[in-house]
Length: 465
Ligand code: ZN
Ligand code: ZN
Image (cartoon, rainbow, N blue to C red; front, side, top):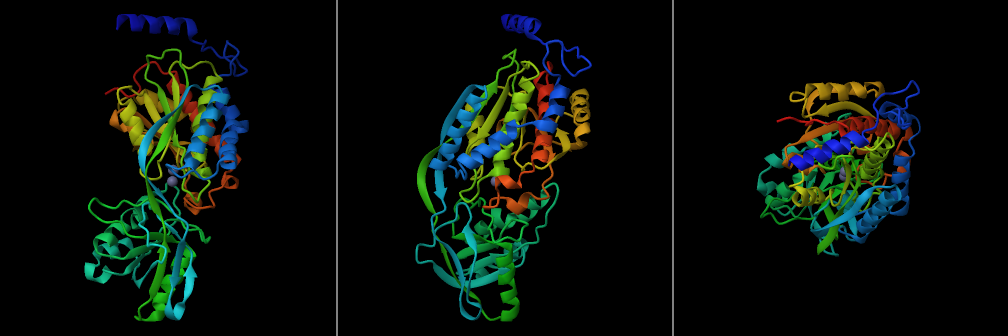
């Protein structure tokens, strides 16, 4: 233990860059100061754009457990190596894998006969190639489905709507998203033949929003699909005009389970001057849904994390190692995040944060050490005020890909992005590069650079217990 401390002290003494700063924004070593580098990132960072432009162009959709996700990981490994990251690896884990299949149809029969636009939800069962035909039962809200007696649902196709609206903090997703997260499991437990939901989204394009379903243990999955908002509203109007007459639907969804496949977590490091100090972990996820090129979700997140790490390195080798984690198989249930925590639980993390809410501007800073390390919290909050980021008393809980930080009960930061537009594109074919506003992407990189740079050069315990 003593020798470790001595080595660390020696390393710090010989390798620490001078902190005196000249009037030109340079440190005495000639490297830009952290503040100057973050300001530069806000003006002209090209690293994040290079990443997200590259992965959406060269790879596109990256469904977990498939060869497309593997190509995404290979692309990310090559990008990290080409950009000077060290200890780059693709850490494999196995997963039970669901794929969407090729036939997705919802046809209303009888008086209002027409096709509605539908896509399967992740973990949906198959109807078989011939589809199923059943009466549709309409629930205007998730609560209506919950309250319905099983007899009203049994043997029918449940149709669940909701009133999700855009919200800056994305909180409507958690609230109205229950129609997707839990609705299919509840309908299945009540004996439904299938379920169609109004997409958990906020746009009026005819793009269904997919996403994962949680079927409870012991509940047999049923076919489950998402209708676009225009199609869901059309179906609701049919119920008004039908005045009680039954509406029937032929539903065909052909997803498959293809057994155990390999996914992986891509990691890379900017190695710090004192590897004995717990690293700064910057996370995102590399997978997307099969129907989505994953520009906002979450190519941009990986781009922001990687660009921030490079920008901090440009100010001089940081004290702590900065590790990027591009998690695999997030969309289908945080499998990469869980696998990473299991594999690395004995390696303490100093602090972790994640980007997985698009690429629009960061507007609020949160930590989980405001009480235990108020000076550091205040310093971090003050450092990003010039980028329009507000301080907050909310306790950061972290995103999907940093399970390890929660499992280790360590320091977490949330850099909250403006999610007003996010659910216009989320899990749809519209999640494409052109939706990313380069100026807002650069603001993200600037804020991440500033925060990661302070933390990577912080000597003390970030979150004292
Ligand atoms: Zn995501
Ligand atoms: Zn997602």
